[in-house]
Image (cartoon, rainbow, N blue to C red):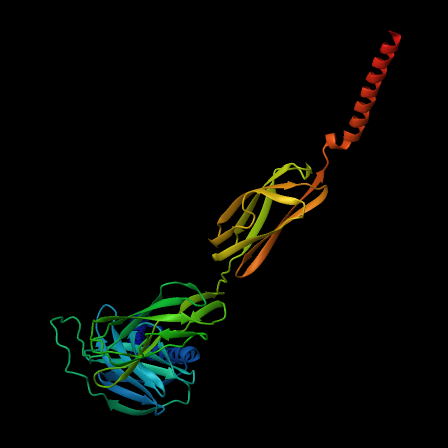
Amino acid sequence: MGRQHQSYFQTESVICQLAGRAGEIRCDRIVTIMTILALVFMIFSTTAAAESYGDEIFERELAVNAGVTIQNSIKVEVVSVRMDIIDSAKFRVSSYQMPARVISVFVGDSPTAYKIQSGTSIYIDALSVYGDSVSVRVTGPAEWRVTDYYTVDPDETEESGTDTKNNVSAATVPELEIARTLDTGVAEAGQTVGVTLKIKNNGNGTATDIMRDEPEIRGTYKEGCPTTIEDIAAGETRRMSYDLRIVDAEPGQYELDQSLINYKSESGASYSSESQTNSLEITAEEVVYPELDIMIDSAENGIITCGEDISATVTVTNVGNATAGMVNIKSQLPSDVQVVKGDIEPVYESIAPGESKECDVIFRTHGTGKHTIEMEALWEDGAETASLEFWAEKSNLEEYYPHILIAISAVLLLIGIIKRHRAYSY
């Protein structure tokens, strides 16, 4: 408001000088016109501000450690002021059931918002900074008013220093900054996620009575996570870790809410700080179990001659993701098939995932027709079977043997007849 009046009088002086030179317009008429324009401008500015930040609750100069109560519950206190390239002031703001916040407001910036529990906001605007005071304007709902002005007892005497450029008067105020990190962003049920909290005191006072509050994900629990933290001196950094155990949380993408820390200054003033949010993806727990596959491979084309040998390789492979212990191979052979060589029923103590076991066997059959050899792999969690089919036929010699006998008999008979005929001729 003061800056607007100053600009107005400068403009008035210039116009009056122009009027004096021209001699056409009287200075008092110009003053009247400029006054009207200035009033219109101020009304317009106030209306525009009200539309953005509400109505003015108060505007006045407050010294460091001075406080104002709005609506009997909202407190705005000047913590310190700073004169620099851009002047600024720190305010401690608190309200009913809300922890105190320390906010920095720079001259010339847009008003800074403070939201109370009901969701309504007030806006704090630093107009100008003096040696140990600040001209401040607070806006908000139209019906809100100042209910008290008071003085805050400083935590300690004014800070001394050799910097004459910055004339600062400040109370010791802790200001905790908290950062939370997870050792992994993806985990499954049954796993443990390591969580680390880094807490740094950026203020100039010790943080006491530190309490930590952090919402949990349903189906998880924290292990080794303290709710109280020892005092943190100004400039000190504290690290703490705990385990987040995932028990039966539903698979999905989770957003971990902020880790909230409530604390106090040495004078008893309350404050709070919160971390950023973190994302954690919980996947379904992998089910591990063994699964065996058994195969019987033979080089034969499926048709053999009775009495011939059949070579086969029996392979058992663990295609699961867990080790199978004590695997028994059982066989079932036709009555006219026998094992000539090899172990048809081996026992394996264990078969690891991806591992295969092989055994070579030689069979011999004595009967004709279709034959089926069945083999089964048995383990603790299940069974798997495989089979080998083949046809057995008689040999060609065996098939034509009666005809050969008849032919030989006929030849022998014919030879006998010839011999006997020659004997008679003599």
